[in-house]
Amino acid sequence: MNNLDLDYDVFIAGSGPLGYFILSLLYARQFSDLPALRATYARQILETHESARVLMVEVGAQESPVVGMNLKNEVKYQKDFDAFSEHLYSRKSSFMHIHFEQFTAHIIRGAMQPMSIPPAGGFLSALQGDAWSQPEGRSSVASPYNPDQDHTQALGYGAVTRTVGAEPHDDELIQSPIERSEMRKLLERGKKLLNVHTDQFDTSIRHQLVKKALTDAYQSRGINATNLPLAAERSKVNDTLIDWSGMNTVLGKFIDAKDAFGRNRFKLLTEYLVVKFEADPDVPGKIKSALVRNLRTRKEEEIKAKVFIATCGVICTPQLLWNSGIRHKALGCFLTGHSHSFCQVVLRKTLLDTLKTNSSTNSDPKDEIPIPLDDLEPQVGIPYSPSHPFHTQFHRDAFSYGDVGPQIDQRVVLDIRYFCMLEVQESNRISFATEDRLGRPNTDIYGMPQPTFHFKTTAKDNQLAQMEAQGLETIQIRQWQTKIREYEPKKAIQFIPIYGFTVPPLGSTVSNPTLTAVAYALQGADDVLRVLQAI
Image 1 (cartoon, rainbow, N blue to C red):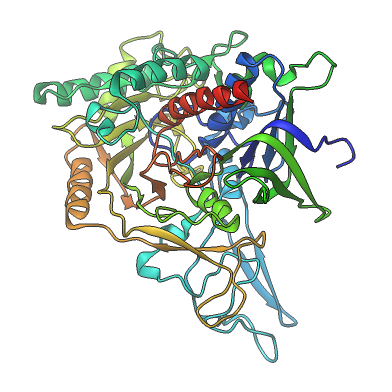
Image 2: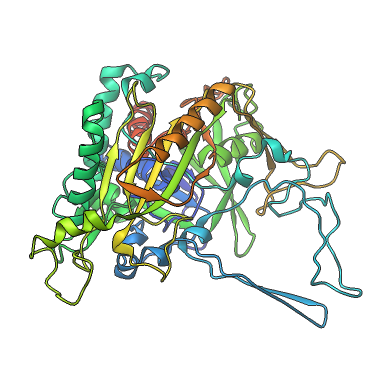
């Protein structure tokens, strides 16, 4: 910490790989919206307050040459989605009682951090003789394995992935703490910060083909296929590439802002863990500092600030508060999620044949597929409505599943994803502890309190999920191959009042799409500015 000041105006606690992209699509995706949230707080404070200095602390490393740049902007990932997705190649062998395991770990897989894996048997047939074997029900010191986790109430191991989604329908704003008309204004401000567009894929042959096919299939039922809103823009240098928005998009020129003394007003501190907030013993209800740990040296320091903001996500924000001794009764409660149905299909030959009548679609006569090699992917969706209680994506993109591989040309593959809401229940929650039920130490990989999930769906949730899956089967314009359904952790309550504490404002965003999270962050940043101006 030789070059780090220990006193700032605003301290922002974050968690997760920083270089990971915000993700462009403002529909449900398995990628982090937290960089967008943090960047929104920082941008509004730096832009509005002429002298405020902001420190952002991040567990992850800076993985891009530009601070906060979307990693998906690398050309190789735009040319090959599978390189960005997770492909799992596992090879196991045994020699001299040593167990080797090799994985091809890709970007998305590497950004997922399991948080609470239920107990499992430790037997491995490849281990022989006197080789050590893992006992069942092991304790969990600095690991994601949690002996207290009931596998029937787990959330896909509770991996720390943050979900983003569409601009909310009015039905979804009923429980919003912000008045509806004000929320719409905040959403418009958020679109400008994120550089949202809906027309950047209009010239794509596949986009046009898929949108027309969907319109023909659904229009008679009063369901409209629309362009997905994307935080992205075609490259001004090469229009076959897309510049996806990242944290740097939101921060803009304020990344390099300086104060009157020539000091940087924005500092990003990577590979540091925010251990806890420290209360001021002389002033009840006030946080005086944050205890941070250098993950490389394990040295700990206290950093002072006037305002502290926690934007660590659905798991790590309540974990941080719990470790800070802030134990509000709502902490970790109202855990919710969405059901998710997925299938991957190959476009019908009859649809592709319609393109052959247009000689301009592909200039290579030897290519049997009448789609240019550099054609942008389709980005079409059907938004949520009371009569269609799902939001649906028809597109191709990089996820932790659904890689195509070399067996088929990616140009003829289409991903279809259905998402629908789950009912909010107070009993669905995350609990935290530093010991398991047998009194053994139980922490996550960073030594923080171990989260345990208690989550069950309702009969209505299951009914909607079944309807969602059936929706895939009714799609007549293409054949479908596989289907999965999963639940991802999110938090329903947007703001938790911390009684007795004047700070921190909370960024509980995982129940929200990126755009909605940014809207709440804009409201929160306005409140922070009022606090700063009053000091």
